[in-house]
Length: 245
Image (cartoon, rainbow, N blue to C red; front, side, top):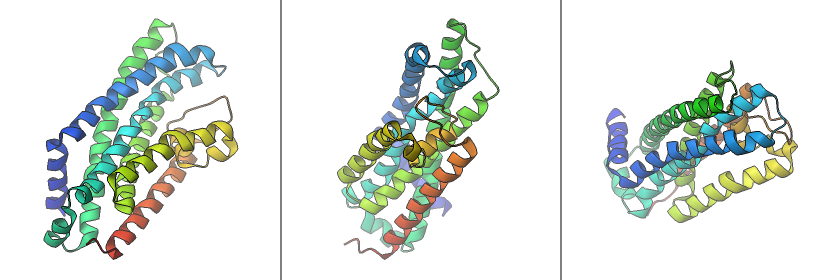
């Protein structure tokens, strides 16, 4: 098992696409932090504490890259037709799936931590420039929630890749739903959207919105974890039973 995980981590370091996505993720998080602090915050009617914490919650906006990394990790095997050899070398398919989940979960965690750190630095500077308190008691939990959410998205990506196999289809489904669909529902019907994966992930990072209350962070975390677990277990079951030829 450890050898399989190490092999996946070697693939992550060797792939230029993975390195590029990992590098762009914190840049995107900082860009959203700038927008939140300098643009959206001026339009907000939330309390000062909530506005400060929303700035740091922007770290989670790098989730799209951990999601894509997870999708590519699994669908790449099918696209390059190496999945057959992978299962021949390791005939116990569950070990392969578990190794990918662990390895790319760790990659997602690393990307999430760097993105959170970049957000912390950029947010503190921007808030100080605007004369707002650079830190509040809820900032650590906001950043921690963002890190957990981004890591969860990496696991979701691996599971979606295992379910759909086709790389283009998996990327389209993942991006259309998690980048647009889920957020659109949350914007139009907050009472429904807060129960969906993206709404739960936003709640996990402590994000507060004026359109309607999200779940408490602990409830959002549990709900998001339930979504991730359900998709992962389904992907494992399908992978173990499906013909790959």
